[in-house]
Every structure is written in C-alpha cells, then in structure tokens.
Image (cartoon, rainbow, N blue to C red; front, side, top):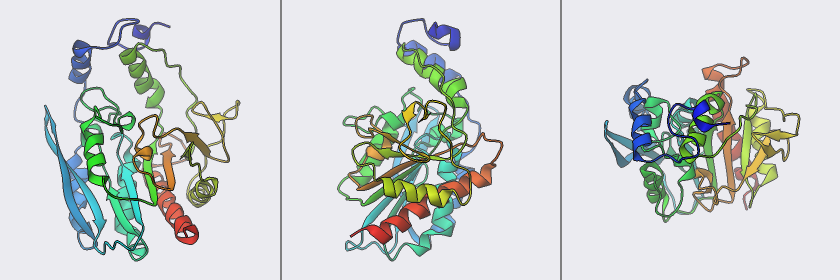
Length: 305
C-alpha cells in the first residue's frame, strides 16, 4: 500500500519535512472554542481548587493558556494524585470528564488525597479536533527528555519534584483513528500503519512494568455500572494488544513517551472511551470518565498502605 494512496500529503517512502508539515497545518482549522467550552468552567471551581495558569503555549494562531487545579487543602502528609485529560485534545470526554469530576465528585476526596487535575493539556488540539499539535507532533508520544511537544514539556515541568501515588490519564479511541490519524502517521513517518478494529466500548491501559491488575479491575467494574466494556477482537486483542483481563491491555508507557509514564506513581491507568458507539452519547462518555476516576481513587483509598 502506498502511503500517498491513503493520505493526501507526502510522497511514498519519504518522511515529512517542513514543507509537508506546513501543508498539513494549512488544512487545520478551529472547529470549537477552548475558551467557551473549557476555560468558562474554571471560575465555578475556584471555591475548592487553587487554579493556576501553569503555561502559555505560543502558537502561530495565537497563545493559549493551560491551567491546573490543585486541592486547596494541599497537605504534604497526604498522597498526591494526578488526573490528566486532553493530552490528545480531540478526545472530548477526557477533557470534560476531568472537569465534571472536579465539579461533582472531587470534594469527596480532598481530605484523603492532594488532587492535581489538568483538564486540557493540548488546547490547540481541542480547538482544531486534532491528535497532534501544530508541528504534527503527538504530545502523547513526547513525555521524554528534551520533549519536542511544548504541551508535554509544560506538564512535565508542572509535576517535576512531586511524587504521586496515582495517575489516571483520560483518553478516547475514535473511528478517526482509522480514517485520519493512522493514515496521517503512516504518511508522516513513511511507515505503513494498517487499520485496526476499533473497540466498541470502554477499556483501560495499564503499564507493562507495573500493571496492577486489581487496580485496573476496580476501574473496569466501576465504569461497567454506567457504560459497556469493550470485548476483545477475534484474536483476543484490543488495538493490536493482548487482552490481560476483561477490558484491560498494557503498554510500555515510559518507553513510548506516554503521559501515563510521566510520573513514578504506583497506580497508573489510561482510560479509553469509544464515543462513536451507537450505544453511547456525549453525556454517557463523560460519566464513564468520571466513574473511572472514582473507581481508581476508591481502590487506592482502600488498598494503599
């Protein structure tokens, strides 16, 4: 399969250079408002969170601020928990799930944990409904030394020096993975990326080096109360990875530069919601993300020693 048979930019067998990246960027347009959808919700959360602009990301289209929400009752004697959304800005329920949790359920956990919530790591990606940033770089492959993504570098700087017991990173797997993002990745890197079966339902991704199966199981069981869990495909896999247990696969998070590998937290999970399923709507997807956070926190609260 020729890469340019499946994607309009680039030449077969040739990685993208500045010209192709510029061509790609010219095709991206603002489709929704980060200010209206995300920033507008922050004022209402000021009564229970210390809200800080931790970075301002300078894009050619204009600068966009990114914010963190931390518990007002931050206490060094409590364990720290990190909740991130919108590393891939187009994955809507991750952003709004983090905000919904902050506004609806976080108050139940402030006494037990120090919560640090970053609802939208990649605001340009949110506005343009993109997996990549304007330089055609994937922030969720860029949590590494000398990160090529300013979105990732800013988050790394925010959490530097902090130890976390838990990190949950909120994502989605969408039909556009096959229709847009994997073809674009293949063209950019001059590597063929075959389509994979998009899982119909929620699943979680653990860390290969510290999979914590009981922790992942607790997330699945909590989410299952509000939405359906993705079944394995005919080969017993989800997105090409071997199923570890119901609704759970593992990734090498640090080696791949994933956000879930950002910290050295003992308990780590990446959520994956499928918003294109005929069985769900936008509200159900948000509820699934909130349930995942709650299931994770309850497990750590009951089992952390």
